[in-house]
Image 1: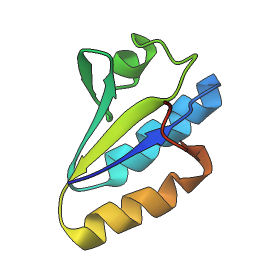
Image 2: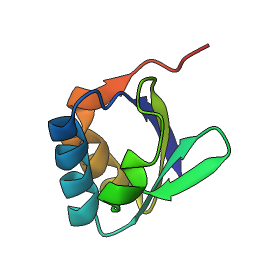
Image 3: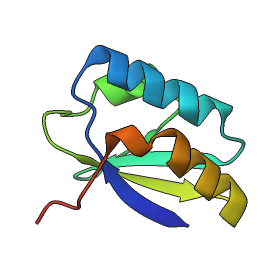
Length: 81
């Protein structure tokens, strides 16, 4: 499993992120506080507070994780303190 943070500040960002997650063959979760959402669910993502970065967990092989991280690199941010 790998984890990183992303910032999804617009509807287009969310759409592109969900499309990348949908193309990924492994499980991808988005965590915000105590909520865990399937990254392939656009409605689920819109139920989160996206005004601050959210944590992404990718469960899959090293190559699957690397490919997904590469596809969403534009949204990646440093971990909040």
